[in-house]
Image 1: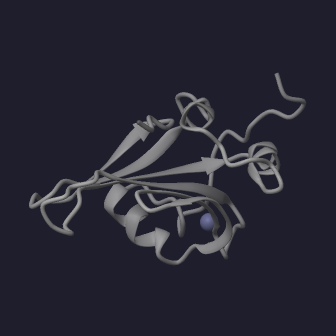
Image 2: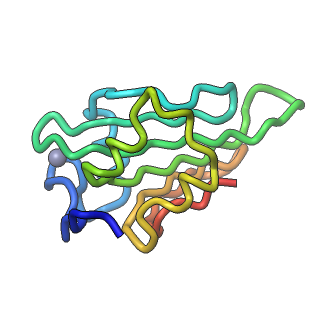
Length: 131
Ligand SMILES: [Zn+2]
């Protein structure tokens, strides 16, 4: 157990609105803090809200599709506690999928699924489930 309790709520109405599609749009106004993983099809960054300074983990998983360049994309956005940010920031080694999946179990996260040639979906999930 950590020494500090995680906050009961995360973010502000600007960065973490109730509607998942609005939350996805709000992601565009977040500023970059750190890049943890930058592989071709797996990108993990920490972003921050300029209004309330809430930090978020942003994960992009792209399924490799050799047919053409239109690869299915799966995005996850998870608000982080200060303690989690401190543990994730460099020079800590890049987190593994298992380490990421252990973050914030049950905590509300945002998902954006954009399967190939399909309609994108925005929805709330719990924690991360990186493959
Ligand atoms: Zn905010």
